[in-house]
Structure formats: structure tokens, C-alpha cells
Amino acid sequence: MSLRVAYQEGSAETWLSGNEDVLAVFEFCRSPLDASEPRHVPVALRQLDEPRRVEVWRCDGPIKTGSWDRLRFAQGERLTMGHVAMDLRRSTSMREASRQAYDIVQSYLQQSPHPWPLKIWNYIPGINEGSGDEERYRQFCLGRADAVLIDPGDLPPLPAATAIGTHPDEPALQVYFLAGALPGLDVENPRQVSAWRYPRQYGPRSPLFSRGTILTLNGARQFLISGTASVIGHQTHHENQVADQLRESLRNVRSLLDEGHRLMGDARAQLDGDGILKVYIRDPADYERIRATLQAEAPADIPRIYLQGDICRENLLTEIDGIVGCAPVADST
Ligand code: 3EB
Image 1 (cartoon, helix red, strand yellow):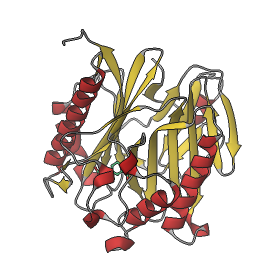
Image 2 (image 1 turned 135 degrees about the vertical axis):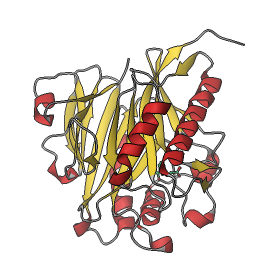
Image 3 (image 1 turned 60 degrees about the vertical axis):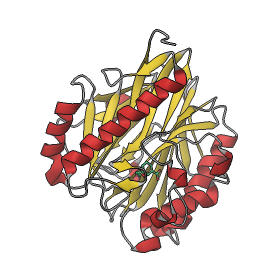
Image 4 (image 1 turned 30 degrees about the vertical axis):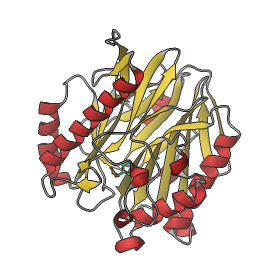
């Protein structure tokens, strides 16, 4: 496998010391401004389940680390992880902070041997604050579109993405990514309108991401799944019904994996022990119900973590993302 992702007990410091194949260690419930070295990525989302774990990414080394403007990166043989934290107390607006973060990410990628973002995670303080087009998520989308000078109508490869809200008092907007030497294969979900085609009602500039990308390295494939919620077409379904929203999100994930299989033919993404799922929950009071629902719906051997985070639409209560492996299958055509 190319990127190895696992949830591990033990401190971030322990995982960062003396492990030559560690590309990144994500430590939850800490401000991104607390990063101690380039491979250390604190994430300001509270973990709801036990025991406390860190997310560890490993890949083939040697791994080179450094910084570029306000971005820090770790570059393996075939993959790069990079992250940037924008202190919002020093920005004029969310739109400006978002544009700056994406400018920095893009100028870094342009000169990197791994210039293609495969997936980008965006953690946005107070994501639902402000009303109408002033909402912080919509302003974040505007800033991203200001920086990303592409016309999605031209169908360039788009990275997969997650956008989740952190506490309104968190000072930093965080953007981190996984990038490679070649673009991933974009996969859209037949059950959903592509996000870059969302109608005007969701904001002045559409979100720019693909529903998933497939990374191929040495013939092995991995599926990077975007944040997936209870959205069919472009509409929220099961308002106020958190368990139904989770089941719909899983139907969307399975539909996306089916579509990936249709495009690839030779391999099929599996929800199994080779992957991980991340479950974001708006209201911690919903944790137990979500946990029980996922237990019933997803194979028991896929590792998962539950994080408290706001979803980008006020009527969405939960969202899932993940990274899963693809197993070879016999060609059925
Ligand atoms: C949705 O389906 C949920 O703005 O980067 C999911 C993943 C969502 C990424 C983003 C937004 C983003 O529209 C929202």
C-alpha cells in the first residue's frame, strides 16, 4: 500500500520521534497554531470516542521536511503532506484568509515534485456564523474560488475535499492536503449533483472539489473519499434525523465506491481493515446514536474515529470521510 493510515494510541511526540516512514501525525483537540514540527498537524476538533488516538500517515521514505512561506510540508518518495494555519485575528476577513491559504498552497504545489493535490481538508472556525451570503462557509468558498483560478466547466482534475467547522473561538483556519506526482482519477457520485455545479442558493461561488479521487501507486489503488453527507441531488435529506442522515451518507459513500469501480474496472474499493473512516458529529449528544448506527451499517473491521465538528450546512448533523484501499477483482466485462 502506498499511504498507510491508522489511528494509534500514544502521544504525537512519540509517533514523531524515530519513525522514518511517518509522513504526518494528526493530533486532535489542539489548535493548528500549536504545530511543533512540519509533520505535526494539530486539529482543533474534539474526539468523542475513547481511547484518545492520533492519526498517523506513513509512506515510503526518505521523508524530507521543510517550510515554504507559512506552509509546512513533509515530502516522501511519492507523496507530500502539507498544511497551513491562518491566524484569523490577523486577517481582514474569512474570504481573505481563505484566498491567502489557497494562494500559499498553490504556489507551494507549483514548484513541488508532487504538484497534484489529491485531497484537501479544510477546518473552518465558526463555519455557520453569519447569515445568507455572509455565512463563513460561503465566504470561505469565495476565497477559495478567488485563489483557484480554474473554470470547473473546463473539467480540470479537482481534489477531493472535506470542509468542517471548528469552535467559533478557534483562532486559525486550517488547510492541509495530500499531493502526488500525478493527478488522481476524479470520481463523482451519480446520486449527487457535482458540488461545483451547485445552484446559486448555496452561495455565490460553488465549492470546488470532487466527490472522491483514486490514487494509484505501483499498481495499488486507494480511494480518497470527500466529506459525504445526507445530500441527494443538491438537497439535504432527513432534516433533524441524525441516524437517517448517517445511513444516507453511507449510501452515498457506497454509491461513490461503486462508481469508482465502474470507472476502474480492475479494482474495487472496500470498507475494511485497510481503510479508515472519520465521522463528524455536530451535536455531541448524538454520539451514541451515531456510533450504534455505524456499528450496524459498516463492517466492524474498518477503523473509525468520531470527532465533534459542524457541517457546512446548518441542517446537516453528521458527515463522513475516509481513505480506503481497493482490492483487485476479476474483470467482469
Ligand atoms: C456537501 O455534500 C457537503 O467545501 O470543500 C463536503 C466536502 C462539503 C467538501 C468543501 C463541502 C466541501 O456539499 C459539504
